[in-house]
Length: 190
Image (tube, rainbow, N blue to C red):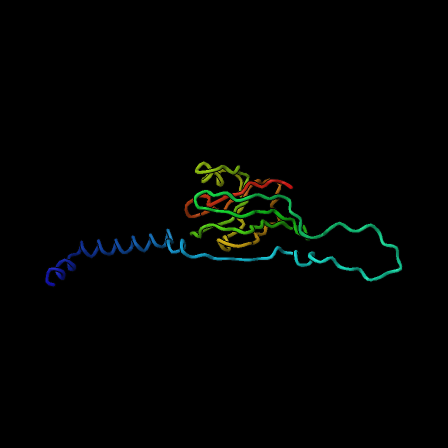
């Protein structure tokens, strides 16, 4: 017991202990390893889909009816399947124009790892298989649509009104902390 007390009273031993505790604390904050075992599931409906799921029946009228009006509900402009990059990732991505003219990126049946500082990015980068695709999405033009709401499920991300979706060709689940793609999808126009 006397030897332990003697070691802990030395200034260098206390400094090493403080640095070690600080390094462990910083490492836990930076890497957040507990997220590997935590899943966050988010299930959102597509905005405007509920209003257009059942067509409205017009009231009876003696007036002759004109041609039917075009559908005014959400319309898919482009879609693609997510491929894995840094982490196993699957699901479908859709670029959807809503009835009001706004746009959303919709992730459907998303399944990826949880991680620190995950974002959804709309980009102009090509989607590449394997390690070649891990770091390409921050090389060109991209728009961060916000933090990933959950690593599982279906969710919507609104495009800012000043963003023209025609200038973008892919979506990435991007880890901003480590500058790496967890997974990405090439958007094919429909």
